[in-house]
Structure formats: C-alpha cells, structure tokens
Length: 289
Image (cartoon, rainbow, N blue to C red):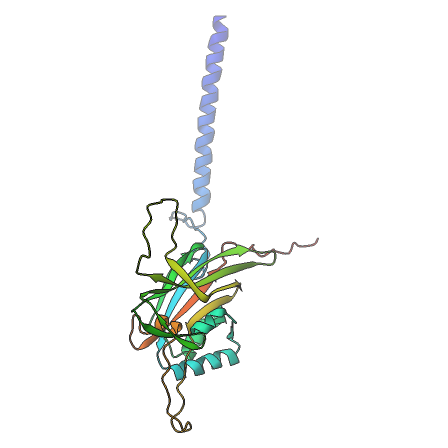
C-alpha cells in the first residue's frame, strides 16, 4: 500500500515536470518563429485601420437642420430659384404655406452646395441635430407688435400682439424599398395675453393657435432634402411700369425669414434626413460553384 502511494506521487510529479517542459518549449518556438523574419529585431504586430466613416453617416439618425444666410435682394433670390429648378436640382412643393409667403423646395441633397451658390452664397451654415423629433419645435419665430399689418392669402390683415412661430416635427422610418422621412410643418401664433384664468387642473389651454392654411405634411425619400425660404416679391421695374409702384405689406414668411440674425441677409432652412443607421446593408451576391 505504501509503495503504491509513493508510485502515485512520483507519477504526478513526473507529469507536472513534463507539462512545464512542454510549455517552455512551445513559448520558445513561438518566439523564434516571430523573430525569424527580422533577425535581431522584435516582430511588430500590425492592426488593420478602421474603415473611415462618411460625414453624414456619423450624424445622429434622424433629421438635421441647416441654416443658410443668403443675400436679401429678392430679385437675385427669385432668379436663383428659377435656375435651381431649371437645372433639376430642386422642384417646387405645392403647400398651403405658400399663401403665407413661404416657398417649399424638394432638393437633391448631393446638390446642396450648388443650390446655395445659386442663391447668392451663405455667410455661414449653422447645423442643429434634431434626431427623431416627435414633438413640435420652433424653426423660426418673431415677435409681432399690436396692429402689425401682414399679407396673408393675398390680402392685408391687421394682427394682434403675439409670437409668430414656424414649428416642425418629423422622423425617419424604414420602408419596404428603403427609408423615408415624414415632415410636419405648423405655422401658429402665441398670444401674449391671457383671455381667462382657470383653477381647474383638468382644463388644458393651448396657447399656440394654428393659423388658417398653416400646416403642411410631406415625405422625403433617401437623397432628398427640404428647403424653406421666403417667397421673394420683386418690385415692378420703374422703366417699364407706367403707374406708381405700391409697396405691399410683408408676408408672414418675410417677417420670419428676414433680418435675423443678420440685418442684410435672408434665412433659408434646410432639413436633411439621415438614413444611414436604418437602411439595410447591401446584399453581397453569393458565388455560384
């Protein structure tokens, strides 16, 4: 019995020694193999560089707002819009907002640099990531004084004191073919006066009043962007027009898109959808044996 225990211990110790020797030999062989290609130098580990991401793919999924500030001259702006449409860079969108002096264009995203050049170039391009905006947020707002006269629906209207607001909500979603973006626009006015006071907590009072013909709903496909700008009103030429030219009151779009923050510039809003994270990867055709 004693001999068996001694034999077992000797066997275990022998196995341990063999394992240590084998491990040392394997490490030594690995080191020789790594240094064999470059004698006297330690082998270097190379790592594959990550694939660079495009500028738009790095943005947050959803919508991105870009603000351009173009020259205020309505004649150059009107000519620029016509050149953009003639070149096929954008197309007009029929919208109820046109009665408020707001032009909507569906533009090709890859042609935005050429579009801003045709509009007279911008001093800056301010970008704001909106993401998946499921609630309305202001794109532009202006304070109106009591008795301000604005053109709406082709006729002048005297408005009360309040805040004129152009708001938007929107989101991107996948479709059977690719992806789309839904954009909802709302032109409303917030009154500075409280008509009545209620202590009933269940009574909800909406301060933003939606204006007539003040909504627009549209969808954008991949590669499309939305442009919003004031509809330029060009005064008649004094040499060709015999009668006196009357200056019409500004439209709602004019007071929203002019002079802020630059007094000699007009604002252009660009909404770019981002589909990079929801578009399915392109399928690689399998090789047929």
